[in-house]
Amino acid sequence: MKRIRVFLVNAGFRRPLYPLVTPPMGIMYLAGYLRSKMDMDLRLVNQRLDNVSDDALVREIVEFGADVVGLGGLTPAASHLANISELVRAARPETLIVLGGPHVSSFGADALKGTAADVAVAGAGERALELIIRSRFEGGSFGDIPGVFWRDASGEIITNPGTTPEVEEIDSLPFPAYDLIELPAYWRRQSMAPIPRRRYASLFSSRGCPCGCKWCHRIFGKRFQGHSAERIVAEIEHLQRQYGITDFEFIDDIFNHDSKRVSVFCDLLHQKNLTTKFAFPNAVRGDVLTEPIIDALVSVGTYFCSFALESGSPRIQEAMGKRLNIPRFVQNVEATAKRGVFTNGFMMMGFPTETEEDMQMTIDVASQSRLHTASFFTVTPFPNTELYNMVMQLHPERMEHVSFEDMNYCLLEINVADVSNEVLFHYQRKANRTFYLNPKRLARILRDFPQPLFLPIYAGIFLNRLTKGLRTVQGQGHA
Ligand code: B12
Ligand code: SF4
Image 1 (cartoon, rainbow, N blue to C red):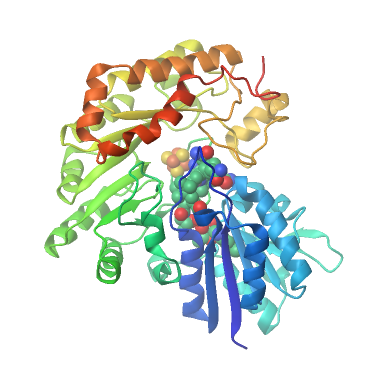
Image 2: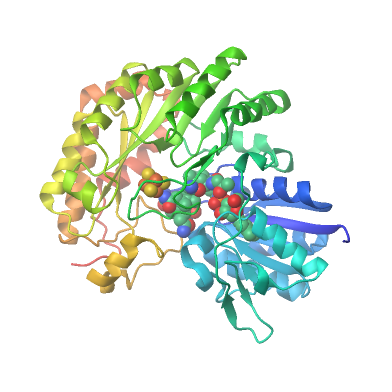
């Protein structure tokens, strides 16, 4: 097979009210895997890092002489996926264009519509992308690759039966290709943890989650697969050696699902005498934690941890499938905060059938807890989730005006609950007021936030939350 040239893009723009950007782990994992399987030249671009325009990106693709362009992105990046693919098709008609990432996982075959891509992959992409490239360059048909979406010669979009092929053992995946991105560029931007300007790397140490939350994307399925403790420590050692990094951000969905794995991981760090700091901005499962696990995580340098309560109402916990043990959650937040870790909470309001009493319970649990900070998001159903199907049955008209383009959970005004917009947004504003306008909490934030001098940069976001729903977005939600 000739030495092919593969250009991978994590598409989408950063926005002033949502300036976060993290190393593009998806295309980095793909690159690490592909180069271990085939002889190829690879280039990776994270569009959101510098908001490089689609035109400039395509000029780079043309100069690189790409045989394959792989475009990944979240749903807010969908218009970029369409535009970039059209421009590449016009400039280099023979290029194989493959779509993947969370947007395809949510929208399935529909993600191909309106684009000039040849094929699209939902879920984990490593093995499928390898098979797609082999099929194009070694001879074969996309029709033989289970679970992928592709266009036949007549342009019709075909969905192959079966599920996307995956590697059997995730420890067999090479490290993400850290060498193909400019890591220091991320140290100047805000990462997922709200702690700007620090020398860090992201780690994604597990795939899949067995919990039953009805709003969940399930990109990696319901089966939890963790990298072994040894493998995570090896990746940490690699990053320390190559880049001198000691601060790591785990962005797993449920890092602590397997308590044994966590404690072996911490023991190993101690045995190797490694200096580390850890943040868990994407949350741990709060009711699975135990005091010994919290102690172990604190002993290896955990300083920031998010906890996802979502709802303080046991009825909503049950109806939405999360089934969190709320008293244990509260207890573990307290135990973590007491040990000096900055704790952040995620809450959701506006579930189908949710009442004012349910929302008040969320406010009570959050504001009486030891959480330092909290976000009270509006429930936003994503296509291809149980929640979305539920809303399409109960209130299809509520989804008619929702645009997932440029969406931002903090600002989107949507309402799929059984209360009016006024009531929903009133409770969200009330939640922010009750939670934050508490002198003891404000004092704890000032005392424990890892970079207090940067706190003023969050003033705009905070004001937006305090005034949610007062500047009604035309056509969204219901009266
Ligand atoms: C880090 C992260 C971010 C980062 C950016 C990530 C990025 N890629 O640029 C930040 C913090 C900026 C972010 C923002 C948001 N995020 Co986010 N984020 C994540 C998180 C926690 C980890 C992503 C990650 O690195 N995963 C690890 C890698 C290995 O997985 P991956 O990227 O999915 O890649 C694999 C496959 O998708 C596929 N693949 C990926 N790219 C490609 C390309 C090709 C060609 C192929 C074939 C395959 C392929 O193969 C990869 C390897 O197996 C995920 C949760 C999760 N479980 O993934 C949510 C997630 C991606 N985010 C999500 C959401 C909803 C958002 C927001 C909209 C939320 C908000 N606050 O408003 C915003 C977007 C705002 C905006 N306007 O852009 C959703 C996506 C849903 C969707 N349909 O898009 C997820 C899945 C979480 C969820 N709860 O549902 N996020
Ligand atoms: S705990 Fe998180 S990843 Fe797991 S099902 Fe619930 S939302 Fe999804």
